[in-house]
Every structure is written in C-alpha cells, then in structure tokens.
Length: 132
Image (cartoon, rainbow, N blue to C red; front, side, top):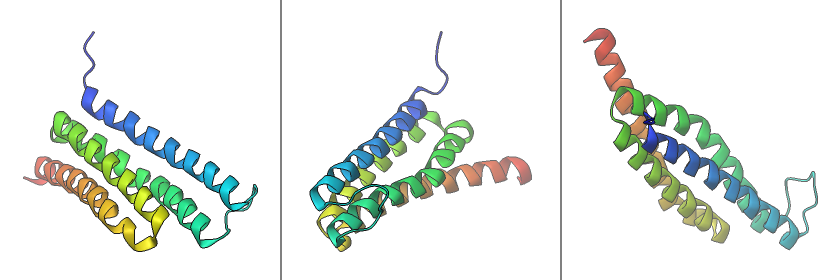
C-alpha cells in the first residue's frame, strides 16, 4: 500500500522530534541551573532555554497546518522539503538562543521563511481554486 503523503508525514515526525529534543534540552537546563518543577523561571541562561522550547511549541501551531495545507493543495514533495528547512531552522534557533538571545535570529528567520512559504503558498492556491 502506498502512503499518499510520505514527505509531509516525515516532516511532521521530524518537527515533533525537534520539539521533543527541545524538551530534553530544558530538562538538562533545569538540572544545570537548579530550576525545580514546577518553576518556569530562573537565571537568564535557563530562561532562554525555556523560551526556546515554548516558542517552538508556539510555532508548531502555525507550521503543522501550513505544512499539510501546502502538501494537499500545492505539492507534497516540496512541503516535505520546506518541513526539513523548518526543522533545521528551529534547531539553529534553539542552539543560538541557548548561547545568547540575539543569536536566535538566523534560525528564527529560516524557520519563519519556510512557514511563510507553506502558508501563503497554500492560501494562494486555495484562494485561486475558490475565486479564480
């Protein structure tokens, strides 16, 4: 049996794994910075790690529907490629943010661009179908 959306599905799995990884990074940071549960604030070093994790969750809410709408409405293979770009961007974002807040910018922009292409590409094709 062929799976209809293998690239988008793989990108979805990768995005979830990136999010799980960020959670593990937070767990390690909790131990390193002495931030016990249920606290979510500590030193600036810990707060940057925690924010990177939370921001990744916030971005998943926009990224995943955009990925799947693009896969269904535009092109499944390129949805998967853009999903891979998003994952690389998020990894760079987290790694940069851990070092210093300004260093998160390149990864943020890479992931944001991937999400924007997915979202606006899907919106454009869907609008064309509805109104074109």
